[in-house]
Length: 265
Image (cartoon, rainbow, N blue to C red; front, side):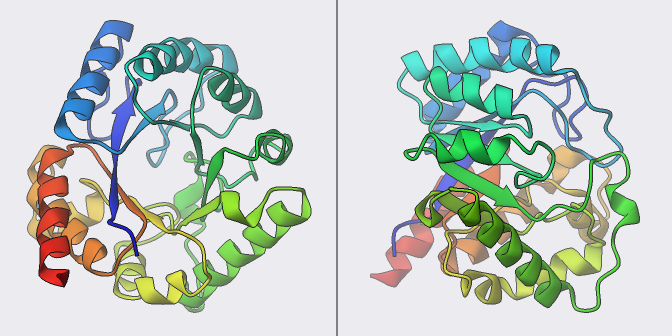
C-alpha cells in the first residue's frame, strides 16, 4: 500500500477553531499555502467556510470570493488542491480552476446537486465524510448504539447512494468525521477501530488535527498546544496505512510518516 499522504489545511475564515483569521486575506492565504507546499504537503485543502461546532454558514458568494482566487494562484504554483465545501457551485467553480479533490463534510447531503457535479467530473476525487447535520446543531445528534458499526453503516449507505447517482466508486474517499456529531469517547472508539472502517474498501482520510478531544486528554485549551498529540495520532494512522491525514502543520507529520515507512522496510 502507498505511503500515507498529508493534506495541509488552509482555512480562509475568520472563525475556524484552530487558526481562524490568521489567513483570512487573499495574500496571507496564498503565502500560507506556499509555506505548506514548501513543508511537503501532498495536497492543500482550501476552505472558505468554518465547520467547527456551532459555526454559522456563510453565503455562497462569500465562500466563492474567499476560495477561488486562492485556488487559482496555488494551482499556478503546481500545488495539488482540494476544496473543502458543501456547495455544488463552489465545487464546480473550483474544479474549473484546477482543483483535484472536493472535500465535502456533508458527503453530498447538504446540496443535492453535488453528486451531479462529481459524476460529471470523473477525474475528481470526492471525500465523503460521516455527517449528521450542520455545525450549528450537529452536537445534538450524538446518539449511537455502537458508534463504530453505526458510522461504518452510514458511510457505506452514503457511498452506495452516490454510486447510484452516477459517482464512480473509484472517486470516493471516506472520512469518519472525527469531532462531527461525536463525543470524545466516540472519537477514541473510531480511532481504535480504523481497520473496521477500512474494510469498506475505500481510501480513508482522517482529520484529528488539534481537535478538542485531544485537548481534553492532555488538559490543553489552546489548539496550538495539541500539535504533539496530533503527531502521535498521525504516527499510528500511518502505521495503519490510512490514505491521508488532514493537518494544520505539515513537516512534522511528513517526518513521522517517513519513520513509519522506514520501519516497514
